[in-house]
Length: 94
Length: 94
DNA sequence: ATTCTAATTAGAAATATTTCTAAATAGAAT
DNA sequence: ATTCTATTTAGAAATATTTCTAATTAGAAT
Image (cartoon, rainbow over all chains, first blue to last red; front, side, top):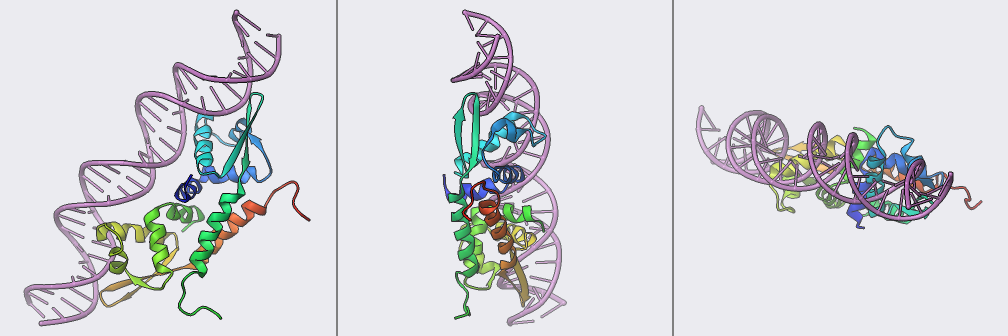
């Protein structure tokens, strides 16, 4: 939901790896889970956090729930970080 | 130290605010602390985490410890996020 | 209608994080 | 040499996060 949630979501290595997996395209919860040595319940927990942070979309097809990267929110983080870098300095190049 | 530490460091709102303060330039631990309603010990704890994540430098002058933003590591995060966005897609614009 | 499959929710245990108070350090000023 | 000031460290309490097992949901297949 909020900006802070996005950073929090990105702070976990499992969740970052999930996002990396989704670079290639949509994957079902099960397909994501099979990349990790963890229960489906745990993966579901992480997907929930990514979803709350708006970092992923979900679409339901048959029995499956597919997850997909949402890059819009990534852009917000990019902005924050870029501002942090460029934002203030006293002697910026003109 | 590591990439993961950097994301973890960025996941806390107090630490992000500290970084924002440091955009303007060097500040002592005390100056940073006075922006927050927290004990100096707590601020010191957060500064320690930012330091371990290489997001800030410290320099000691007299009694004071000055902290300064290190944008090098911010660049690494920017890269990771940019790659996440652009990295994989099946139908990228040519 | 029953059973199977994919995924989520609930509740608990283990672990990690954030914050505090009190004590310690280290250098500056008297 | 003593005292003061800025900051950090230690240890503890409160809170949050991560993970598990077991139970639940909801739709698909038989």
